[in-house]
Length: 299
Image 1 (cartoon, rainbow, N blue to C red):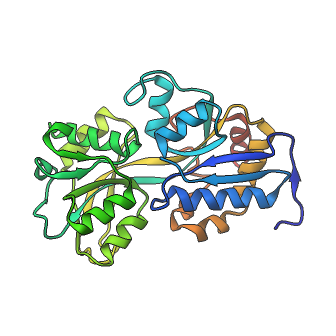
Image 2 (cartoon, rainbow, N blue to C red):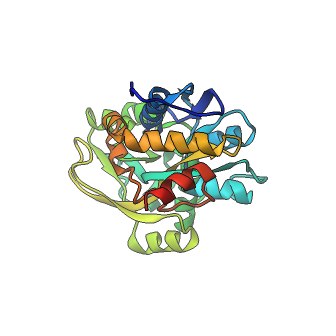
C-alpha cells in the first residue's frame, strides 16, 4: 500500500464492472480496482464480474455502477442510440483506451472451417445476448452477406464457448478480447485450433463502414497448438466513468492507475499496452473532465 495516500471528496464505494472471468476485462479491471483502493485514501473500488460492454453501459447509464470496461464502438453506439441500443444511453464519459480487442473466429483444426463463408450452416457461438461480441459477429457476417439465420447461432460467453468447442457441441466461436484470451488458451492447451482469417477486401469494407475497426494480425505464437497466423479486425478496449463521479476523484484514480501501472501489467499482459501516449487512441466519446485534466498534464 502506498505511504502517501491521496484523499479525495467523492464516492467512497465505487462499483467497477468488468466482464466474464474467462476474458481479459476481469483480471485487468480487478487489478485497476486494487490499485485505486490501495492508493486513493477513503475510496474502495469493487470489481464485479459482468456481461461486458452492452450490459456495463446500461448499468452505468442507469446509475447502478460507476466505472466499466467496454468496447469503443459500443460506447459510441450507446450515446447515439444506434445499432444494439434502441434508445440513447448517456451519463458516462471516456477515461482512457487500453488495447486492441481482437475479434477471433475460433474453430478446431479438424472442423473443415477455413473461411468466414464456411460458417454457413454451422453451430456458431456469437457471444452473450446484447454483448459487443454479438454485434461484431453480426457485422462481420453481414460483410459476407451472411445473417444469423444462415448459421445456428448460439449465445454464450467465452468460457462456455471454449468448453462447447472442445466437446464438439459447436463448430466455431466469435471471441472479441485481447490476445491471448484465457478461454482460447485453455482450449488450445488440449485441442489443435484454427483462427479463421478475414479477407483483405472484407477488412477494408468493414473499416469503411465501421470506423472503429482496425486491421489486426494474430501471430503464430499467440496460442499453443496453433501453428499459423490469422488476419482479422479489432476494436479498442476502454474505461468509462459515470458523469456523477467528481472531477477530482476521477483525476486521482487515473493518476493512481498510471503511476502504479506495473501492478496492472502483472495481472494481464495487455496491461502493458496502457500508456499515456495511447490513452486517447480510438477514443470514441468525450473524455471525463478528471481524465482529461490528468492526460493534458502529461503532454
